[in-house]
Image (cartoon, rainbow, N blue to C red):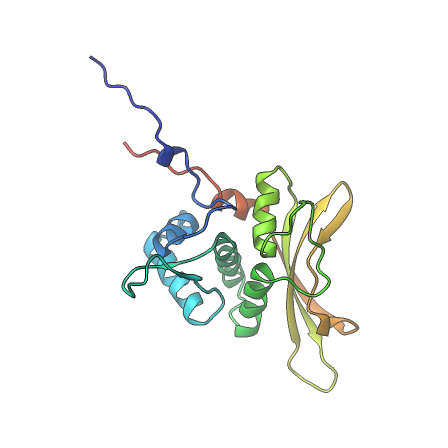
Length: 203
């Protein structure tokens, strides 16, 4: 008799879902990993970004200190963007902090987006909107001249274009009125597609 396989819930699950909490270090690494970036290398990157404070776990599975840290889905998006920024040469603490903060925190005056309920962070909103069929998301990091200082103000935002209208988060309030010196953009749709891809079937 031929063996028949049925698809399990685990096989149908995606790596990162916008409404899932309790992501372990292992799950984050598996989600971020791709050809050229092993799970082990992804784990090391996550540890480095976490140690520097650019992403933070929200707790542990149990009170036992030996249990793994748990991360929210927006941390996965922040890590994936930080990885691409690192590949582009942005290794400064200011740049990394700006990107991590912008995906995990609302700025004063931010547009809440197309959903009825405002999610806990821009990253959560972006992932929920992407799951609902919205596209054309991007991350921007910009460097603004601060009068009398050599060091620029670094700020990041996340935006989406829909039917000719752009919406999203704002650069830091301190950037208003400052001269823009340079900027960099990262398309987020491929990032989201990778993070929210289906888990491979286990045979």
